[in-house]
Image 1: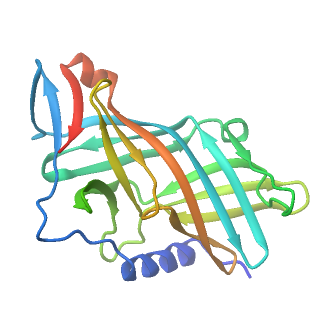
Image 2 (image 1 turned 120 degrees about the vertical axis):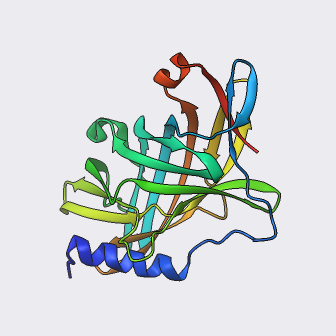
Length: 229
């Protein structure tokens, strides 16, 4: 059975509304900091940033198996005051070349190559919070909205083309790289589960690593580094 894209996104939004991640009110929320003229200060006006890295997505449910890794994605957004931020661009450069299926000896990969990647409901809002001694970022689900999601179109020799729609409303652990002046964003045990819908099946997991850094335009304007604290 195939569902319309809106039906899929609505279902994902309903699931996420029930499983939303909330930060502890007793813990002071972390903030974004920017370094200019060798001096650190809290971000007061939005700073444009890019995310560079790769991700690996796995969908396995009831005999269905899709697994692939994508590199050199194009993700852009902002970091702002109060720990807030946005993701305004989520694109995959040359998906037919830079997204590769990951094969196993025991299972037939139903997504050996990717034809295209589409993001929905941009821009996505992000927020920082502290948990278990770590600084984390989450993509915030807006009440009443369909939510942040992306669709990967798998191209197969035997099964033809099929969409894999996944929510990207998850959280990441952030680590400062003081030498490079960047922030590393990684999936971990708290964020490796992702809600994906393929026909009538729901499941999924991913791993990813993205480096957040100021854009070249921001560097030209005097931004030397960013961090979370």
